[in-house]
Image (cartoon, rainbow, N blue to C red; front, side, top):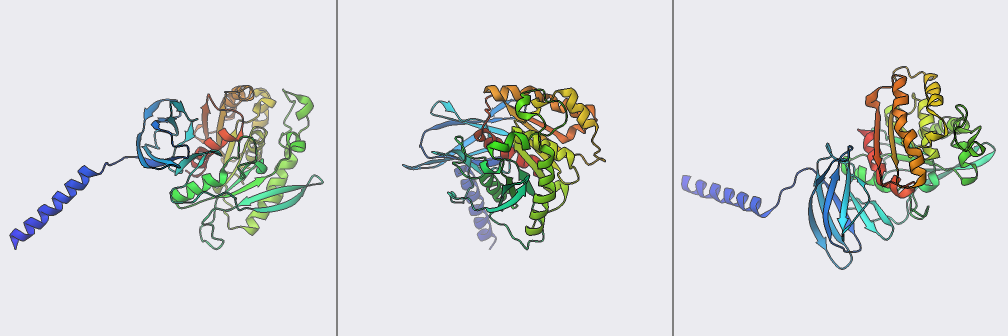
Amino acid sequence: MKRIVCIVLALIICAAVFTACGEKTHTGHKVLFREDTVSDVVKATLIDNDGKTADAEIEQLSKDDDSVLYAVYGDTKKYCKIVFTRDDSDTEQLAFNEYVSGWHYSSHGIYPFTEGKDEVDVIDYARETFKFNGEEKEVYICTPDGYDKNAKEKYPVIYMTDGQNLFERNATTYGSWGVYESVRSMEKNTGRGAVIVGISNPSLTRDSELTPDIGDVAAEPENYENGKGKDFSDFVVNTVVPFVEKNYNVSTKPEDNAICGSSSGGIESFYIGIEHPEKFGAIGALSPAFVLYDDDTWVKYLKSKKFNDNYPKVYLYCGEANDLESQLLPSTKSMPSNLEIINYPKDKIYETYYDKGMHNEKYWRYIFPDFLKFFRK
């Protein structure tokens, strides 16, 4: 009997050793990279927020006539972006964190890709119409795949400007923000999604309604003087938020509510969050138009606010690869100093930059999952 037991144990040990030798083990978070053009990806490079790089572990999982699929592994506590080198050319920097399941390179561009999920051609969202300043304003409400209206745990919400550019891949020349795909990826990896509420800002009224009036405008006063940002802020907080909270299973806690936007939407989102820290626990200001006001005006405005120790987290991003981003970069980088003058907690402020980032939806799509992590961590 003892001899039989020993033989069995030996066989088990050998099988374990054989398996270990036959299978390569990986460390860190796995992110997939799917490409429809079937090129050869040479490597994947991980990047931290200081710009330091490291080669990632990468393996080819499958390849056929239509696509190739890779898996990449890395430490999300250390690195926040990734670049894939394919056919001797690099992709742009893409968000890399535990909320990202993968990225898909196709004819539509690069969009978040969720392992085990089919691509979605048509995004399902509700469309509501409200009165705002004598006109009709559309609001788009998108719930995550696993949304349960009766779930005990209520869903976090991200309210976003420029709702017309968030979902549809043909929304702009540069595609959409891909927010549905990003939330789907987050839900796959974390078990919990978020409700996205996009508020439209038509081009004819956009400059006015997304510009807070906090002092003398320092740039292009003919377009931005006497902005209606307060009206828009009041509309979001007093009309849109109550509707969403009444009709959807969402949390009312500040830490579960964020406001986010880019460009003029970035400065307005910052303004709304600062005006209403009791409602929004996180602000996403991507390529924000802070340049409309000089630093002295910003500091004077910030000093007038009372937070009562309820400071929203502030996420700042900007590129510098085209003229507009280059114009916005200095004022984006100076905002943390403005905040610190009023003793805003440093640990509530996060900055990230990309020197090749341009002023369009493509680059905001690439960085949006980084904001998701910032919001939910």
